[in-house]
Image (cartoon, rainbow, N blue to C red):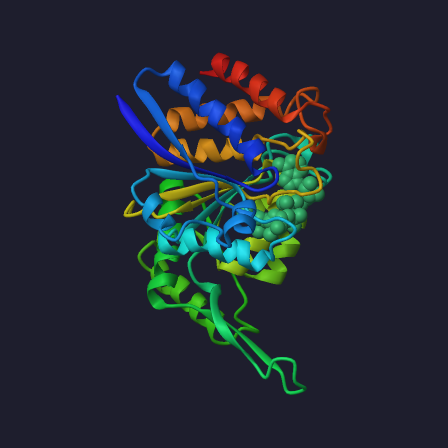
Length: 356
Ligand code: NAI
Ligand code: MG
């Protein structure tokens, strides 16, 4: 019997609504597989907690999370608390303290009807973005000088260490080799004359160890064009923190929207827990209405199961998602249906029982 200890941080807005559905799925799997069990511990952290206590998470929050096998997070951020506080004091803090330097964001078109790109099919849009998740443009390095004065200057520094750059690029080469796919690096060496020239050099250097992996290197602006005009060029993509953030929202845009986009924050060495979350935020515009799409959060469960080495279940969850998006009556309004969040979760579980 294998047991996995999962920390739940449902967070704000629709976060708790979608995490509830993901947990339902894990509990259903536990019932179907007598060799697997999950235990859950919930942490009430987020913006409401901040308004009550002045803190996004407990002071010893990181220590409280340290022994878990995984963290399952909904969304963080809500009107009333500045976004840079909610993001930095919870989400980014966990990513950094637990050295979750790999952000895995699959961009997969599950059904042709979901893409706004005419004539693109499921075969054309199927890639994995590996985003650097610990430094780069989101290192939080910089300065704010002469605040409010005419000579005011702000500096936001990109930090690219050799260790940080090499390890993400190496991870991507390994992934491309393992899955027998091409590897594309997205950078911007023509304008960012330190950071991205360095990135490109490391990409080439590490590549010498992987002569079997076919590589491409695009500037981020050209890559944005190709993502729309020929997404079939991309198989495994490696890129920096900022560029990865942006192009994966573009990826969500061509595959059905944020209600379907997931991301894993991984510490590959398993020295610390990894964190699984939908890409979307707390969606204040629809929070409390019971219409949030839970599929992105359920896809996170699939990534978590893969990470646990339970790939059979990870695959079963993904296949069931694929079946679900073929029918509109059991989908939330963002995908053209009129089902409620909880009904989508329940119907998902019925389908999963048949798939598994
Ligand atoms: P958002 O992702 O919350 O919403 C953008 C749009 O997509 C909204 O119209 C929303 O209704 C829709 N949407 C998002 N998820 C959906 C779902 N599951 N089902 C149906 N529709 C969905 O982004 P926004 O509005 O820019 O940010 C809202 C708050 O969330 C902010 O405080 C922001 O800082 C935070 N945020 C947190 C993230 C995280 O926790 N990882 C990521 C992005 C934003
Ligand atoms: Mg983002």
